Amino acid sequence: MAYVITQPCIGTKSAECVQVCPVDAIHPRPDEPDFESVDQLFIDPNTCIECGSCASVCPVGAIYHENDVPDEWKDFIEKNAAYFQQ
Image: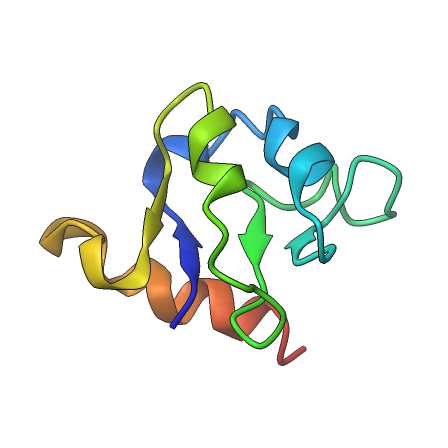
């Protein structure tokens, strides 16, 4: 299980979550080339340690534990994982 970034992040990408993640699971970071070309940030489910630090600082409430993602945003679970399979 992991945390998942959902719809409220689209167009926001405030990146507070990137700064607090202790295992560098959230990408793209603002200093990475594809930061400007994606519509949201993503959490690598294989790297996330479920600490919840990211969720507590998200200004738009876009980050949920995988088990708690609202039904209307369940597709973001796969969307986050797919970003890291590129």
